[in-house]
Structure formats: C-alpha cells, structure tokens
Length: 113
Length: 114
Image (cartoon, rainbow over the protein chains, first blue to last red):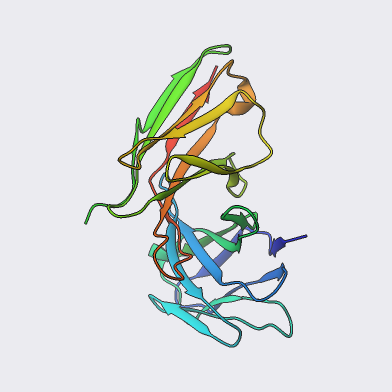
C-alpha cells in the first residue's frame, strides 16, 4: 500500500548549518509529493511540492527533488535560520476513491543561534 | 483572499460530551477534508467531502461524523468523547478545477478532553 517514511527527529542544528530531512515513499504510479511545515501552535503550511519525477520544488531556500529511482523526496536547505525551527511533514496524496494525504510522522527541527 | 478558517481555536470538553468543529474553505474550493493530529504524530485522514457528499472516510469510529453545506463550509461532529480524542483537528480545502492536488490547511481546532 501507500506509505511515507520520514527520518525521526529531533534535529538540532546551529544557525547557517546545512539541513537534510529524509523522506521515502511507497506508491502506485508517480503521484505528486509535498512538504508541509508546522510552526509551534499553528496549522500546516505548504512549503513546496513536486508534481512529477525529476521535478525540483523550492521555496524560502528549501529544496526537494522528486527521485523515482530511489522513491525519495528529501528536503534540503543550505543555511538554516532560527526562524526555520518547526516540524516538517512529508505528504503523499492518495486518489483512489477519495482524495487524502498520507503524512510522515514529522521531523522536528530546532535551530540554535 | 482569506485562507481556510476554523472555529473555535481551542475547546475543552469532558468525557462523554459531544463537540462540533467548523470549517470554511478558501473561496472557490469545493472539497473539504478533516484530519486529526495527535501530539507528536502526523495528521490522520478522517473525512473528505465534495459537493455535500462524503467521498472518503478514514479509520475512525462512527462517533465521528461530518457534513458539508451548500456554501461548501463543513462541520465535524464527535460524540461520546474519549480522552484519546484530544488532538488538533485540521481542516483542509482543495480546488477541484484542473489537476490541482494541493490541499490548504486551516490553523486547526485544539480539543482537550478531560
């Protein structure tokens, strides 16, 4: 069946460090893939998406490349800031009969000044 | 344009009570979905509604029900509350025009059951 596996956190980095959060998926076909971010006490915000294989989604310095060979959609940022501290969720849409997302368990990122 | 709105923002109930949560989608969005996010976990799908009809239901008991109104707003009802129903309830809306798959989430309603 469809599933998303996300690296466990928490991840603690110093400001300006490089960030990678791993996400792999199992799915039928080649669905779009999403990253959402949740700041403390808030709902989910769309961070970026990729709609087909080899696409690169990017936003606010974050990037993720849809790699069908490795069924991965890892999130990266070259230089993190304190304001990036949040929980990041990888999401896979499932469209058979209904439309829903399957989310990873979330990765908490803490950036220290 | 306003995003997805939800009310109330916070709610405290006791076991056995009933609760109703409300959601207004982004203008023009006809599909509304509900998710439950327990602390420390990813959101879990509860329902999807489109054109006032239930289009999908997750693995939740019959105590959970929902409906969608002609203006596409939606309500989620939970009866006979249990302590385990304490969670953040998220509403998401989506445009079904064209190949749009992005769901936009509201700020959520945080429910605490005592």
